[in-house]
Amino acid sequence: MYGTASCDTANVVYTTKISPLISQKCLGCHNPTNATAGVDLSSYAQAVKYAQSGQLKGTVNLLPGYETKLMPPSGKLEKCSLAQIDIWIRKGMPQ
Image (cartoon, rainbow, N blue to C red; front, side):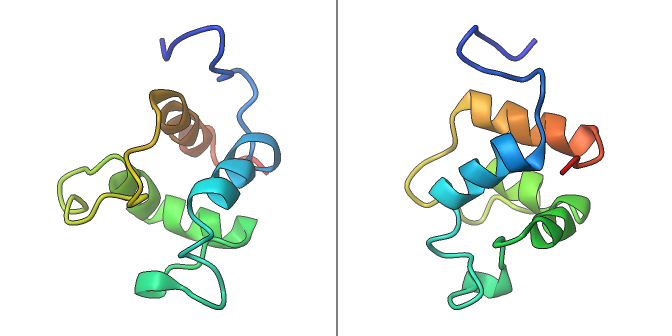
């Protein structure tokens, strides 16, 4: 459904897929010291908070109501990363 052999969507959990993605793409601006727009994604609990509200998925996918600013600002996430976020949320945000 989501893709290619290089995109692992089988075991999407926070510690192995989502946390590394957030660390690489989000924490430069969304950390406890510099929580841009009040968003801190530095922990599992914080990531779940924004995932449950719809803000995480809405922002990275530029969904209606969230399309005012591309996140991350460096460019839209790859399809695989977007798929992993979607799967993680749909599976109940396993840690």
